[in-house]
Image (tube, rainbow, N blue to C red; front, side, top):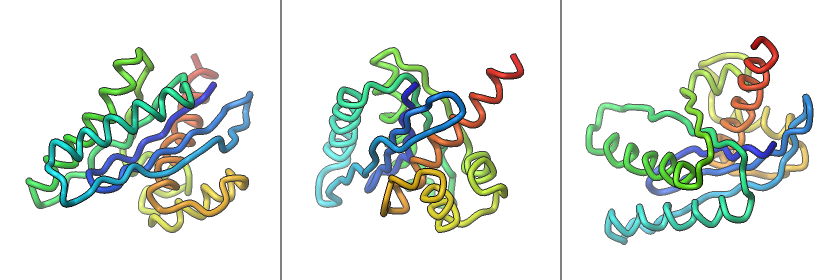
Length: 161
């Protein structure tokens, strides 16, 4: 099974692909979708859409896991993040790929063991769990963390069903 993890944001959306074989997950690919802050909001969303289409076309994931929006005090920022996240949910859905959503706390707890872990701790554990990933940015490691979280939670649910 191939899982695509997505950490959505308007400026830099992280993505990571892992391949699951039994009880093991291995690194396939990862990166970021960057948008130009000088572009219109609509063009930035289009960039995310087009790049997500390409990523799905190349890696053919069986499932997609997306981080839920962290709502902050700035409603305008939350709205823009929500729109970028909407694209991250829409694209796999257009390809009939099941989409699963996880909160930042669930992801951190599944990867680090505590829901209050810092981004750098998630990055460290992702590098430990996926040693062939090499150097990955915080956005990429967050996305790989989302994919690994889904792998652990989904695998557990399958075993107890």
